[in-house]
Image (cartoon, rainbow, N blue to C red; front, top):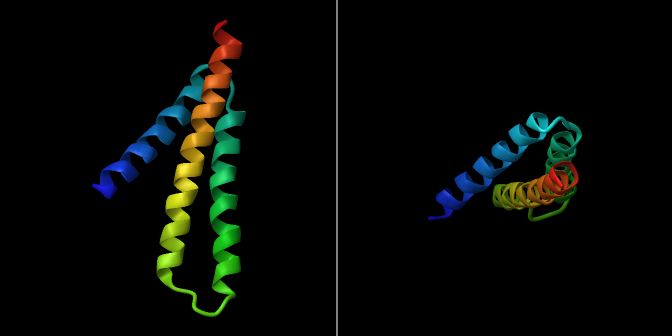
Length: 86
């Protein structure tokens, strides 16, 4: 069941990332991707320096970063729709 949620979050991210250029603004898609990169790479690098580091930690960070990007993408898309369509 967890794999379906993961796939749904990624599908949501791709849909939002495609909607931003369609409404004429690619900056939110770039910011969304940057947030995912920063929320994954920096904590993973920091965690790798600590004792007791396991590969499982990277997996949890990946899930967190995808969820964060999905939420951020939805919020930014909603904001863009309110600004452009109203």
